[in-house]
Image 1 (tube, rainbow, N blue to C red):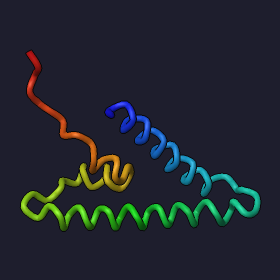
Image 2 (cartoon, rainbow, N blue to C red):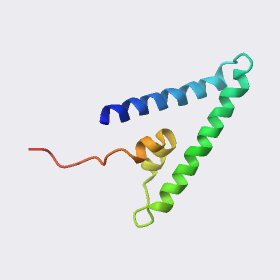
Image 3 (tube, rainbow, N blue to C red):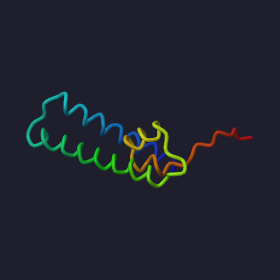
Length: 89
């Protein structure tokens, strides 16, 4: 499960880099409009997920680091198992 989450996060990061690269390098039609449109829709969905995760956890609001990871990785960060800080024997 951890491997799948890691691969999903790597693919998400690659997608964000490709979307950022679309602003730097001129693309041919129809990709010059399609890529930024998809990026905007993805960003809107991630902001919505960030707002919903804040509403669901009113007792302990998420930290800024968690919010950035939700923005970058979306549901993959929300469903990730919590990191255990205890050393294993």
